[in-house]
Every structure is written in C-alpha cells, then in structure tokens.
Amino acid sequence: MVKVLRHVDFEGKKIEIRLESGPESYTAGGFEVNLDDVIVPRTAYTISLDPNKKFIVPEDGLSAHKVKVVAYKFDSGTGTWVECSDGEDLSGSKFILVVHEK
Image (tube, rainbow, N blue to C red; front, side, top):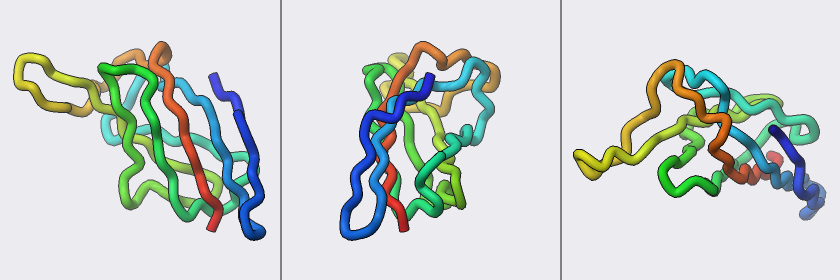
C-alpha cells in the first residue's frame, strides 16, 4: 500500500510524505520504493508505525526515482535490532517515508 500524504514545494524543491507498507516477501539487503514526483532525492527519512520494526534508508540508498529501505526487527532474546529475514512478510508493517528533492 502506498499513499502519498502530502506534496510540499519548499524553495523550488519538492518534499514528498508517503505512507508505505513493507513488502510481502522481504529480500535481505533492502527493498526499493519507487518515487513518482521526486526525481533525485537529496535526503530521505522514515518513521516506523510498527513498534517491533524499523525501516532505515542507508547512506547509499538514494538514486534517481528510488529510495532503498532496509527493514529491522527487534530481537527480544538479544535485546538488539537485526535485519529482517529473506522471505519475511512485512506487508502489515507501515512506515512514513519523507523524501526531499535534490
């Protein structure tokens, strides 16, 4: 599920705020979010709406029309965050993605 919540024009650059869901089958290393209106993102941030998951945009995760997102889950046994497993269904986990155009 993708829902663009808001487009903002700030000093001639677009800021897009999107409601996203994780993929039905996660691939280790991350997944790509395709951007419609932001041609080249300068920065991207996430806000997880699932307290047991977090979604991070890595430093090398910005490219033309795309943002790479890596998903993590909390491992209560170790008390640490670990990357989600290959094939894990994250479609029920939602996050907000904020992207600022370059």
